[in-house]
Length: 223
Ligand SMILES: [Fe+2]
Ligand SMILES: [Fe+2]
Image (cartoon, rainbow, N blue to C red):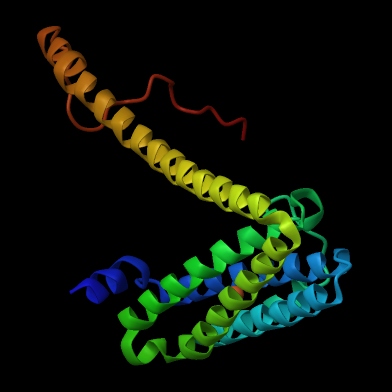
């Protein structure tokens, strides 16, 4: 039952959804490639480059899943770009926080792709190789965090993970509150209209259903 609900909720417009996923992968590749240019540790740089290449491949697979396949080369087209405002930047965040962020994001990606794989059945086969890569990304970023711990930066790693989890819950709450405020203001305005404006209009005899003539007269054309 749950896969059916997920399919209905997320996959009504399959092409749009695939394109959205492809964009997320491509922008991830851009941020990782940009980070690779900034780190000094050769092991870390190599991992970031390999990871960025995987994300480009994911963008391509997803893009090619649309019908007809779009093939605009989304991943490759953004790989050399600098980080956008919406992106994550290793220089601003610092290595520990950046890697903690990527580690948590990859864990979420594994859960989400597994969920969509299940929901789409045979159609979801394109997620298999992506899912395998995402698991590897969780593993290498976890290993990178362990290396920081061995270097005596365990407290920094824990603090970064805690802060990022807190920030994510805050973002979820804000998104929910924003949506709730839209619905509640629509409800309150409808109630005001139904309970106050409509009855008083009726009492004042000003209720007229259907089309009403406009206040302005006919347009006079000079020709
Ligand atoms: Fe990916
Ligand atoms: Fe990934």
